[in-house]
Amino acid sequence: MWGVLIALLVLVVAVQVLFAGPDMPLLPQAATVIGVAASLVAGLTLVWILDRPFNDRGAAIPPDTDDGHRADDGTGVRVEYKTAAL
Image (cartoon, rainbow, N blue to C red; front, side, top):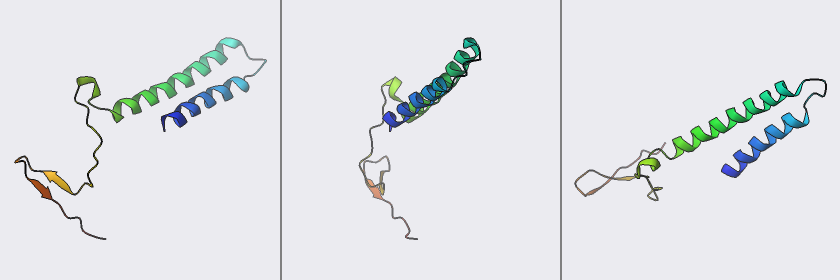
């Protein structure tokens, strides 16, 4: 997933550079490319942070391989929860 998101970021910046107007000054074009690239990088950074909420404090939550129907009620006893079929 991250490879696709980064490839899209590169593609967006490349399209902006390829379709730059030859009669327009360089500074506004560069500012536009930098602004769009910075917005995309900020968005990807936000997704990265929200995807790993506790990694910076050493409390990373590992992926759950359980089926999601059991939970620990705090006593060490596993409790089975049934979901209603639709």
